[in-house]
Each structure stands twice: as C-alpha cells, then as structure tokens.
Length: 235
Ligand code: UDP
Image (cartoon, rainbow, N blue to C red; front, side):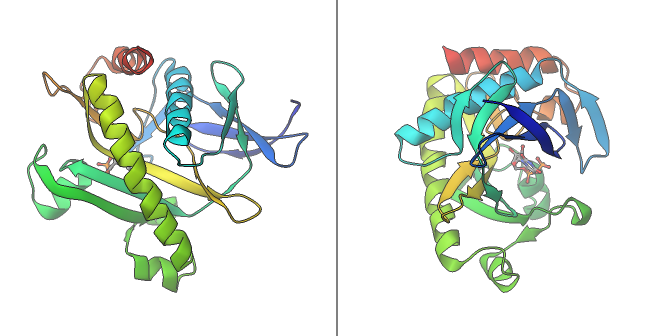
C-alpha cells in the first residue's frame, strides 16, 4: 500500500492518503496534550502502545458485532484504516464518576454510577469541546436521528465488551471516549482510537490510575504505565 500525501495532523496522530481512495494510513505520535492543549509533553513509545492496543480492541469489537475502521496494522506506529468522515461528536461513556463528571455534578471520583451514562461533546477544540445533548446535535445537523440511535447502540455494546475484557486483565473501566465515522455509503463505524489516552483504567486491586491521568496530574511512571497496560491487554 503506497503512502501518499498527509491529509491531517492531530494532537496524537497523523493521517495519510494511500493509492486507494477508500483507505487511509494512521500514524501514531508520542505527543501528549491535556487541558485543551494547555499542557504539552511527550510520552516515549505512547504511539506504539496506542496503535497496538487500539487494533486489539477494534478486532475485539468487530467480533462483538461493532463495525470499525480497522483494516490492518502495518508497523509499530502505523495502521491501515477505512477512509471515513468523522462525526463531529465525542461519545463518552461512564461507569464510575471521574474527571469532568465528578467536577460538574459534585460527585467524588470513584463513586460507581447506578447505570452507565453516555454523553456527547461537540468536537470543537476552539470551543473547548462543549457538552451537547441529542437535540443540540440534531438542531445543528451534526448527525441524523438514525445515526444517533446507531451510535448509542454501538457505544453501549463497546462498553459492555470492554468492561469484561479489561476486568479479565485486572483493570476497571471507569470511563472512555470513542468516535464514529461514516463510510462513503453512509455506514457508521467505530473509528479513531481506544487507548490509555482515551480510557480511564484503574487497577482492580490497588485502584491505581493506569491511564492518561498519570500525565494530566503528574503522577509519575507515565511511560511505564502505558507499557504495563499494553502488556496486560496482550496477555
Ligand atoms: N476523553 C478523551 N478526549 C477528550 C476528552 C475526554 O479521550 O477530549 C476521555 C478521557 O480520557 C476520559 C473520558 O473521556 O476517559 C471522560 O473524560 P472527562 O469528560 O472526564 O474529561 P477529562 O477530565 O478527561 O478532561
């Protein structure tokens, strides 16, 4: 597969065209940002961990009946994916209160939720990715009712599958963010990445944070923790 011009460079990944208009190559970087880009750094080999871990999870999701953009891992940092148009919605699913949810609703971090809570935020860095409900997304034409219904159904499936998968690896899935894309024919597929950058994972025994909060909150052992998560996911 021939790598062609760069289409896009984001905070954690670059996307390239290929000689096939239906396929892109994603390249994962070690750059890390937090707090709307106000905190910047690098996490050595994060790109390798996030690429490999995402692909393992995308393959698992396919098995569970959730279509994804994943085609084939090409190298440590590069993966061939289906070309999609990303829906401008971040889909967040929470099992336990943490992060912004804890702040917004005044709930201690670590409080289990009575049921999983799904939320949308509008993918707009310039606006700080504001929280958004279905009506807002529909009123702005960001997705159709059918697309939102599909996205919610898939998000619930992803949550159930990932909760069980991570628990087997000694990790509690606190919350996560996923993104969906649209193929040319309108099919909705899971896209972007699933990694310690986009999931909160706590060790089952110690409740130690095993995710990007180590970088956000300067908790130390960032690289080691990313590597440890990948080792557990692979085991
Ligand atoms: N998240 C993400 N990208 C974002 C915002 C959130 O991947 O731009 C993930 C985050 O890692 C966590 C979940 O979504 O697993 C919920 O994040 P929250 O809304 O609590 O915001 P945060 O405190 O992470 O900024």
